[in-house]
Image (cartoon, rainbow, N blue to C red; front, side, top):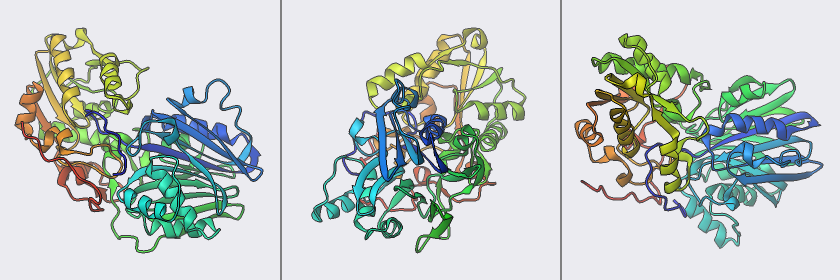
Length: 475
């Protein structure tokens, strides 16, 4: 990866971003539509946000660090002009430092005039592409792969944005869901394997593009369809048209963690409900890994749906064991390790009256390093829990990811060098069990997609180009 920040290790899966775009049939406050769309996608990135608006053959934008509501407070949203096209972005950094200059959308003037690009995903050949462009006298203002995407599209465009997009996509390797805006077009692009989600919706005559359907719901848009893997969708005054990239593989490979954790549970991805997938995971955990217990609970919020599924299947009552501070964002999105640790301490607390003298089954989506889970188990024991049994809605994470999840080294993964029993001992739990790969796949059997399982089995749709994982550090 190119210029990845050397962040300290974390304890949760971390994805990159959320994107949103709107093409309106009339000039109006399109920035407001994007704002609410980004608000619904806030779970995909809490580090920075930005909105760009096209109006009168110009593009203006505003970007800032922090949550969407904070970035666009104090009149920053109202200061954006009315227009007919707008795109927006919320970010967690997987490539490039946590700085304002790396916030998106990327906006510049090129061969096709004013252009803005927002990207969710991670290229594996960023350094190679960047070096090639620099050799052609390209100048970069940021350290993110999204700017490489924008510059390459421009360099290959010959003055036609669609030509540039099609040519550039032949060179990209990795995951990318893009919204691209010129002064008269909105373009949506999904990589050939469909690793990151992207969908289309409609509000009257306006077309909306979003990372998840929950963002369509937030702005009152009706779901049209998912953008197909390898598809380039163009929305302009002529309506909506579609082209497929060359040599699109027969099998798609969406990141399965979109269902396990990343997506909001009220979203529908590639034809299947995230809620149903998570509930099915909980039921499978109860069926295959039963235990005598007094209550079942989820690590809020991502574990709650699966915990209810476990409760229904097992007959063990669902009772909240942990109270979550709703004003603290997802721990993993804090870009600095010290911030992450501080937010963990104020993020949740054990409900002593619910867990005292009880045998607790605790459901979570995954375990990366194990540091957070170890603290939660101690928290429950300190609150009087007699037993704590951990059930995980995914297999053991054994391999790094280079396609948009910020797990870059084996040393960050407890599952890279410990088996289930050893993980249990390390965490201080009474028992720990994970779903198998086949069991996890069965929870998503209604989806119209294949899945990337690289973090479980080391088999990725793209090779690990320009990527060096740390050697295993056995303890």
